[in-house]
Length: 444
Image 1 (cartoon, helix red, strand yellow):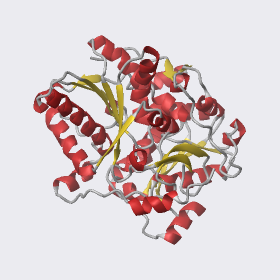
Image 2 (cartoon, one colour):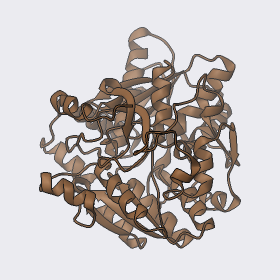
Image 3 (cartoon, one colour):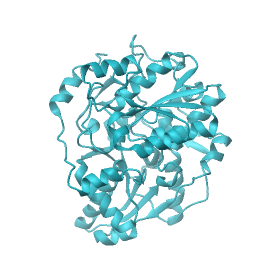
């Protein structure tokens, strides 16, 4: 059920939304960002894509050549899972675990490294949660001869040594965050020497290093518009593959940390839904321990903990919020992509939150049926797909479900070990911590 067609263009949802997202704001002046404001962090082509309203953007041939190592990724029908659930629903998943580093992240790591290479950049800094993004950028740096420095959230650095070793094997430098290498990291450690870290903290460290050296750029693995544009290869392929299969999704599902894998699979279908007046539903799944879309505030906030990054209008739990140390490290981010946030505000996107034990249970159900072990992040999408299939069963209706299998869990076995040993627990939504963090959101 796979097409051999590798897309030649990325899709940009901003061409089809009924309104555009609010502009990003300068962290000091609070005025709308200009390209020059972002030039210290990003290559100009990424900056221009960030503000583009063009429906399609050509994929450079060198990027397509690297994509061809694993793309197009297969679209699979989970027939054994359907049988196990005894559901009339048809369940399809886009298997991004086939990439060299096992997740969807190289879809944007490669073009970001490519555009940096064109500008003569020799080093990129970044952050990573569970390690999928850091591994992807390390791979892209090796392919395109760029040094990569990764700040990895400390709790994941300790829990997921396999991903750290992948980064180091590709030649990247990987440091647990918060660290003593930056003022941002030292400030956090002064407040809490045992801080588990967060994506917001790691972003602060990576941005600080990039801003302090004109020869260094910063790269972000989610949240920003150009990242979601690059990830659209997932949905663009899926549209053609589902057409080949003679079906069209009634519901499209993805997990959300910063929003990139959900946007990647959902936005091409959402664009068709808007243009063709289709009734497809789009469901984003987040952890109940870090429920920025379901319980956060839609407002301007910093993308990092130290307030070094531009302010974005998005769903947020407050930039100083440090989520509990759940095993879905890639979903432990306080904010959400402005495009996904706007989709939720416009009623185009639904959001649900699940505790981690329900998600691990869903992942094992999928494993027993389909034979693939999912990353803890991906297990949230599986949980959503299973619940949709059970709902279809209860209502006695056919339903075509598509979800993004954003990454495999072959390097997350310690998480499964803890789950199988009964050592994991669910974390309640930390309302008091979030309320305190939201008080620190900048007044704009």
